[in-house]
Length: 119
Image 1: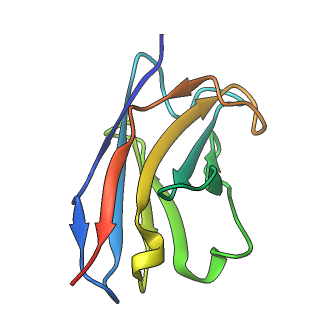
Image 2 (image 1 turned 90 degrees about the horizontal axis):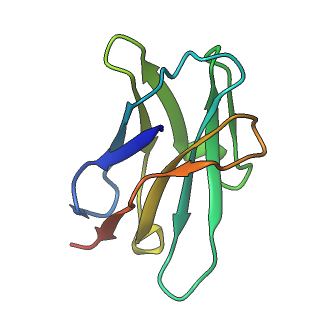
């Protein structure tokens, strides 16, 4: 069973860069066909897909966030990381990392981590 755990700061100041790491256990982030996704949910709103990194390291991003988003991985640590630059209070949300056996599947979810953007 794949397990995911998000980690990072709970509070970020406006204009700073948010960095969240997802640590994966029970499976390798290089396993064929698996995709590793970041999704967030602002308070009172629905889920927003942010981006994905594949088992081969290729990436794709939400066009509305693409200019501020970067997803990378560290295969030696079995982790993948989200960077979101120039944050504003509108980036306040619960952030989830997710594993899927295909890019369009969300089989395993982390517990989510609350990030608040405030001065």
